[in-house]
Structures are given as structure tokens and as C-alpha cells.
Length: 132
Image (cartoon, rainbow, N blue to C red):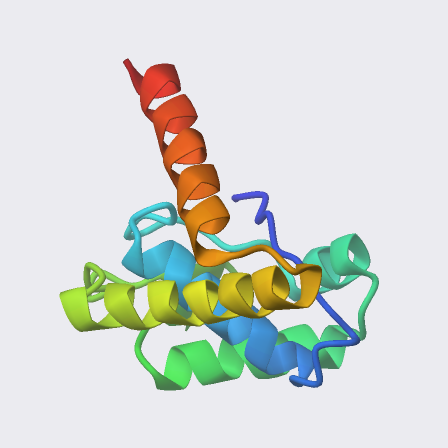
């Protein structure tokens, strides 16, 4: 069984079950949740996230309907063998959403384009240095 590092936002305006579905789908598509890996039981994940177990069950049903996970009676919920790698289009869409948020915050904070690009390059360099 896997501990899932999921973040739930009640101020986002998006239903919690959808947040779970999107985050778990991302973890599977990115390979951070591997094929055959067991997800936490409904009650355990609900306790971890301090949400209603029915919300987790709903998310798991949606994921099962999409073919991302499969429930095995008495054994738990597992990532399916068909959990596909993330497509280029999906990766671009995810990044575009995050870039939109970054640009919006930069505008609200009064950070100009040049400064924002400099900050991005600094962060990229730091991350690259950690990898090597």
C-alpha cells in the first residue's frame, strides 16, 4: 500500500473528489504510482485527508470507470496495467495551467516579465544543480 501525498483545497471551488481524481491520475500518468501498486483503503485515505470516506469512494469509482485503477474484492484498489504514460498534450496542458497561475500571481504582486524570467532561470539552475 502506498502513502499518497495529496493536497486538498476547500477554497479552490473544485469538488474534492475531482481534486483526488486529477491528482491520482497525474501520479499514475507520471509514473509516480506504478502499475499494480495498491492505493490506500478508502477509510485510511479519508482519515489522512480529513474528508468524508464517501468522497474517497466516489473518486476511486471515477478512477475505476476511467480504467486508471481496479478494485479487487477483499484485496483493495490497484493501479491498472493500462495506466498509460503521460501524453505530450497532457503534460503541456498541466504546465499551461500552472503557468497561468504563476503569471496571474506575478501580475498581482507587480512582478514584471523580465524579473519573472530571471526568477524562473534561477530556480531552474538550482534544480539542475541538485540533480547532478
